[in-house]
Image (cartoon, rainbow, N blue to C red; front, side, top):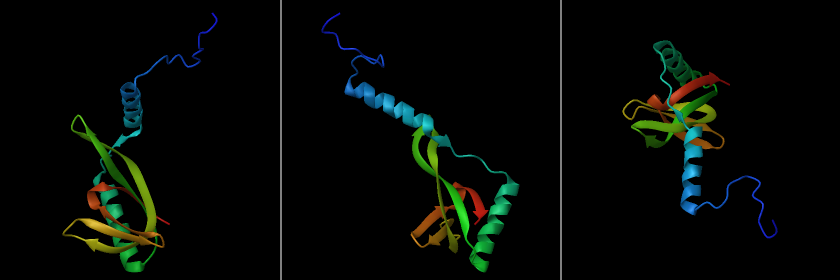
Length: 117
């Protein structure tokens, strides 16, 4: 058939709104729910936070960064940074992680994992 444009992906014509909706759906599939931690994991993280603050050793903190809410469930992604725990703010329930590149205030309930560096 002369004059017909070949469509190798089989996508045909897509409206911009449809393309945006497909991109949003694909992005949502990459997002995760915040995992629930058991008491043992929480105790171990508390110990590492306090030791890093007192003994001044570096840790790698992985926390949940919320992106959006879908069906009353927060979805987000993992963020991580390494550094030293400089401060623990019990009123705001946050830790201050500091390294050469800057600092982060991280909420206790968002922390997923802490490892010694």
